[in-house]
Image: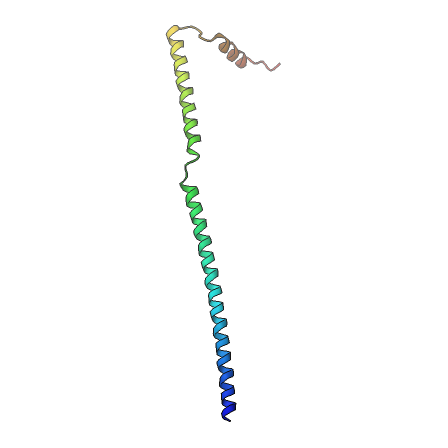
Length: 106
């Protein structure tokens, strides 16, 4: 009977060890997956922060504003010349503009 009880105790101990090993393995697997998800989320947030904090398109806006300022200053300069001399400064442009507005459609 003593041998029988010892055999059952060994089987129970072996099963408990097996269950413990499987539980530890399962825990490590879950832990690794959670860590991988955390690292992935951290990477995505880091990339999005980097994209949102860059100002690469600002150069295009600056260039557009500079061009707009140049056009306005040129128009003001041309209007000043017209007012100063009270005559046509660029006759070719004046003729082209008049011909565009006098379009008869034929």
